[in-house]
View 1 (cartoon, one colour):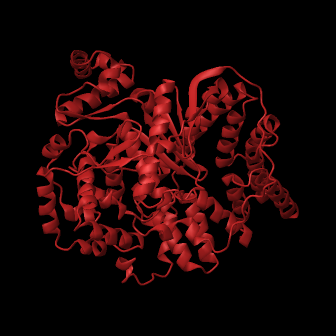
View 2 (cartoon, one colour):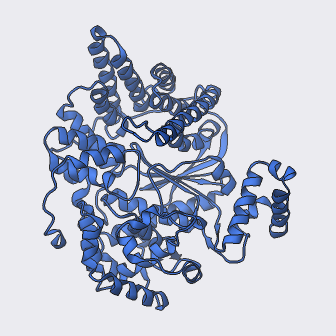
View 3 (spheres, rainbow, N blue to C red):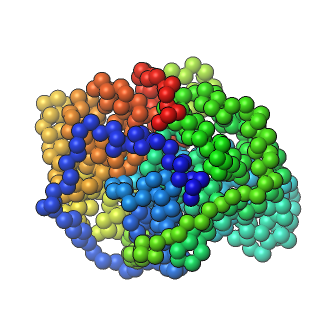
Length: 608
């Protein structure tokens, strides 16, 4: 592991723990135990497997679920060792991974990645993965089946055409000669609709379900334990380096091998200008035209990882980007980019290094598996969908272009309609399970985040009836009361806010490690436009330690720190959101905040 142990760039200073301005008191030993009470329902086909760092849900075979959970735990061990985090205390909330049956089922959920994007890669590499670093813990969803990447454009066009027709039940094909011809051709190429993603086209490459999951987990690990303003190509490449993880028995882990189809993909799409990558110019590429692929990101990152000459340069480059240096200034550490490009071309034909790591048998952890009830299972997908359905594109008050303003308005209005339709269905589903805690909690969250205080309050009360000692119903009830108090006339406003904060404080006492009450306490002041007291700042810091890569939490904390005159700390907190790999909904506000913060000197960052 000589080559990669040095890659733990000194970015721990960017973690929320390093930004805490005062100590967070540990949980008291006599804290109240949370006891969930409810009416038992029949078991479902869904199971949940939990390990020290991950929770995996699946309605597939239990053996596959257990294997996946164990392998992710081993990958966590590998990454911890490579990046210098082995055996460190870990307060972060566990990643929640949901395995969806197949591609049509996944696509039917219409999950929109608002806080995670890849590439932009060529359109052939539009694989199905969902990731959302939410305030209360990150979630990920992938399919359980392998996916086929079609490399020639004619087959890709035909595949997309067939998928569109089949997605509409084939109705278009019945009266459309071109569509019927497409369906007939598809019938010759595949045995069933399910074969669309696994057996279409000869010039193709396979992306296995495991590789997709391992790449996503590696990216989650990097942005959680080492949150920084990474360029997107690096995060993509980092994930790809670990996507080919192989397990030899129970005690040997192998990583760094070339992904399947590497040579074929690189020969099909050719080289890509390295200057465009390091300058971030590639980010404006159109998926239908760009030749940038995950394999290109893999090869660049893999080369820099394993090169004794280039690895120190990568380290300095990442440190500069993490501190807000522009892309061109950071890229200067690589010297002549034409030389780097020649080295990469030579690397294409060279034998690629990889590494093996021994996994201590005594660290093997058997996942805790339980079967979900029918009520719990009914809302597994709804919890994933929540992030996409509740997010409404903001209107721009300063848009001067009339055509663009109309486009923004239409997108905003359509999102509101979609949210209300989804929320209406959720209300009907939750009414079928009045005694299911998860159903009422999901509905309470959806109502509160949609601005429906009264409906949120009702759902929270139902959840509290089911689980009176659970902190979550109290948290949502407190937030609903905050919104009602803010909207109330002045005489009752202060009393309403006090009552709401009392409930939030009670929720915090019930579970001192829960993120919800910490965030809600801060929000009670932010929503009321009141000065944020120091204990609310501490609450935000604690929430940031538990979920370090949540953009919303970082934006809230950085805003408070800036208002309190702590510009340096605010800048470190907000940089991953304002200048990092992903265009999250919080990015515009984060960029505005960053622009008004002073820029420290960065001349000596290479030595850190």
